[in-house]
Length: 277
Image (cartoon, rainbow, N blue to C red; front, side, top):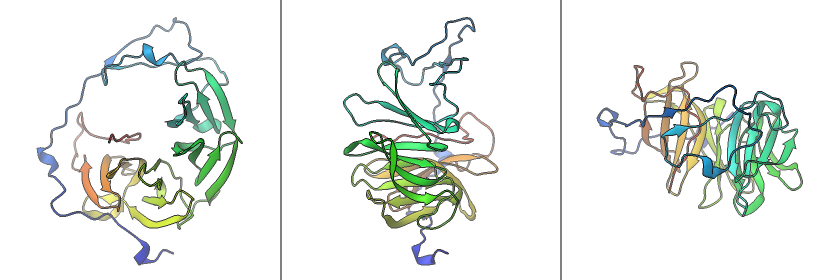
């Protein structure tokens, strides 16, 4: 059981939370392109140069009805390795594996098997052949060259402690100090670890706006030099929101926490998220 002194719940910095009623987001339109069912099937991802470079204008979908070693069952986390070739790493969730692609031409490079239900993945800074993986109820450090887990926190069973988790998902590394921020999703909290996998006595729990007894589930997390952004949903209602924290767990902003009627900007179950510098 956790001691009250080790817990950190989200707090509000006075004067920093804007009234969202005056905030009017703009949602760019998306032009959908239809593809003929008789078109030739793609066995690889197309070169980056063939994508429309105008942001948020066109979504292109590539799929194949044939079963192959690169067929992916429920894509989850994704990252680019910090190497000269910038290989693409993809979590193939239900196939219990991670796949490496060439990020330029989409060709298959390697498959890393026997990684049960990988949720998310991110690079380990200054270690180009190592990645962090969240899977099952654990946080893992995986060596790509050795094709094995070299360090692990958690177990095969869910729990709620400094080293016990319940389906952790989003994971990110602070670029300033290498600390690991992880969404312990079904424990409704964010946990922080040092680069050598030691628990940092800093975490915070997520709950509804001004309703601390109603917890929300963090899904994915992004970070830059100053703050964290976390996508959340209010299971089982599934009314989503984006929480902006400082690195000590204090809330700066909440996007969509007051949206009660369906609309173009209402969030349902938001997942992936990025922050620029």
